[in-house]
Length: 118
Image (tube, rainbow, N blue to C red):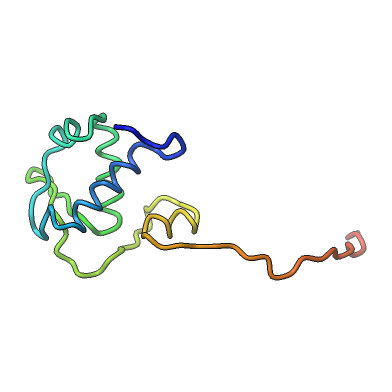
């Protein structure tokens, strides 16, 4: 799998799986291929697949059921926030959501320091 050197491989896999879900390749309630099958499909390690699936689960796009498999979420809401979600920058988060963020400098000035604390 060719990838941008600045992007982690699991992020690339996660984005490809998210696109497949959005495009309707997998329907709500449908079971995803097994981790082994995904490894072969994307030519990556099991650890990479697990990280990608974990991120999709944190986003609320899939549900893992132990002993049964991984299923496309039937929930209508987009992103589910969890306390265990990894910390990412605002701009990275917006990019993952397919949105654009920008930074604008509204004012720049030099402010003299106040007296030192004693």
